[in-house]
Image 1 (cartoon, rainbow, N blue to C red):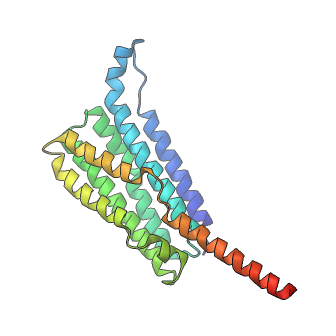
Image 2: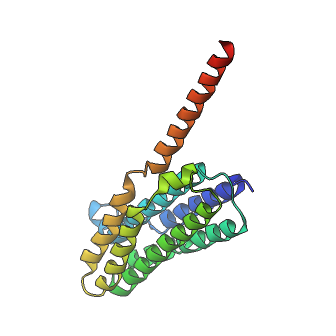
Image 3: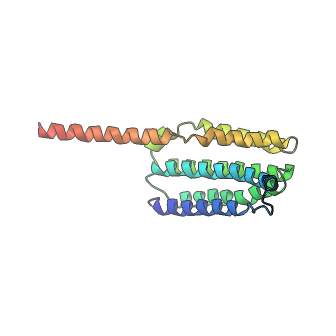
Length: 209
């Protein structure tokens, strides 16, 4: 099966999730800058969650750009990922309304961890449908960034019960790791295209000669 329908559905879900999050930010009753303080925690949690959803959208796009085939397992794995991502607005709103309290922040970290695991499962199942010589296998490689992210989440979750601000710095740290789009797939993908174009050009030249 081709992945176009899966991508369109995923894009729609992520767009809705971002819309839900921004609606959590209520307009202050007052008209001074001081009145903005009451929405500051919600706004900070919105920024963090917006970054995460944007990162997942970006990497999801790059992953499927190099994906030629999907099967039923991939479809369910993608839904599994969307399930955990759909919980981000809820947990993001909770940490914002409670000014980054320990338990809400720990739950937020669990959702981020499960989202990362779900993405890893999706990536693994997609790789199984492609040969080891495929562009996808060459591009993903050992995925060090993904493994480092999992370790940081595992540290940050229990840390939130001890020091909330240090824990939230770990969540922002993971986002910063991924904020620069991962160019592995893009570089490998376009390198493959250029090589194919050069081969086609050489074949045409040989035929003309």
